[in-house]
Length: 289
Length: 333
Image (cartoon, rainbow over all chains, first blue to last red; front, top):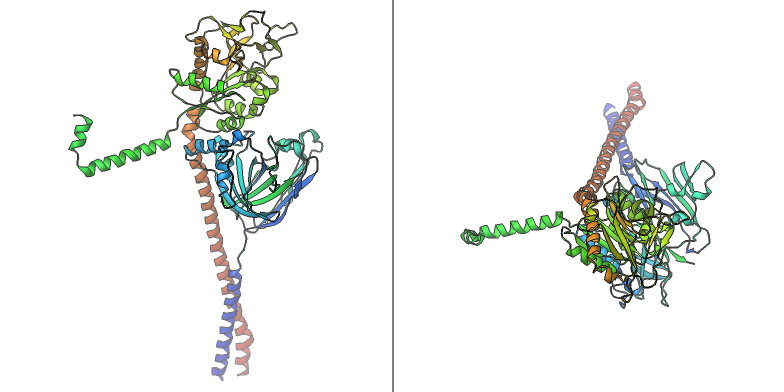
């Protein structure tokens, strides 16, 4: 009798051990797939002069971080004059490297030479994307971080520090340039801007429309770079802004050649988690009206 | 013993080693030393910039590299580079320099050297450039010359400065005219927004025609509002005639020397830029390390918690077995 009871006991103990171990292992195996979850990334497909357009971007941290940085940049297509190009007659093939579009721009070539002697390189990103059912390859050179580091603060250069070259599947080339920021000429074009971490929201209005004390003038808004330290799991970050473009950057315009795409604006959003770029930058391409 | 003799006496391996050492030293010094650069911009016509650059290249006591840029955005980018020692800007209209107000003001306030000629000094629409950097903000002009008279301004020394070195107390330079701040009668009024020194005044109007300014961070600027020249070589005020004038060459190179060699931007930025880049890199590494440490700590805590849960689960099973199974069996037995 004691033997039978002992066996039952041993069996029960083994079952308990196995179940407990399996339960613990199941909990232990649970891992967060993506450290950052993009809940919303809305942008207009067309940005027209004098028409309101709203952009919204919401992300949630699925893990805790010591430091999170979001970098918003906006680039606009620019028609270059022949004196702006090293080889104005240069034609591209669909298989050409989009870096070559940037190498052919006098200003970028000059900047590259000036920074290379200092051992400085821009942040470089390459993408393959679809726009209007056409495959495009894009390269982005970003000098903003390195120039901010050299300058020791926020840049006030009034000139582009991000450059993009695009070649589509038909061999058409596009040149875009821009800077860090939520939108170009924010002071002139913004209707409202809201930046929030969880329920802690800060609103901005154009400087000449400031009335309620809860809103700040847009001249005091961050220039597209948002830093948070530390970040808790499940913290949510929201950036919503509405623009009504009236003032465009000098030289703004679409590529005039027939058959080319209307890549007028490109919004680039990057998240750096503890100093490391999360995934690939988000690229939002818009047509110009 | 010459270097050659000494070299002959050395063994081949030692010479190879010495060559490698010298080459690596050269590479290191090439990486760490950057040359000061003076950047020239003269708006749509860069011919004048090239002539001014040539004057600086030939001047004594200025060993900096020179560079001509044709576009304002290249000049704006140059303000952020550590090798930029001094910037020379000639603006023939406000549109050529309108986008440069912020970067040039920031460059001056961070210790940069600047020399401004013509509209960049006095055109009210260039804001801080005309009031704080080259403070000759104007509302009155003097550009009428009697028929047959040479279009030129007479420079008269106001105070002895480094910029007047080697120059006479009074000299003449070709010019289409001068703008200055004045009252309703056209009498010169001081620009009150900045503190500045006047090296030379325009003889006809009494307005400053060479003035200097310094920023708190060690920036130096020289304003030459009376330099108003044209690109047409048939006109007496052609810029090619101006750069042949010895007094202009002396005045201009003195101004560049004073602004470039006395300002602090290059010396500080070129010394610090590697530290700044290293700091940025080490900050990023520190962030990663901190994050890695926090992650490891989190994992260790999680492991502890899971082990505790597991032990507690086993204990609970033991208690259940003991109380609900063993005791009833023993009682039954």
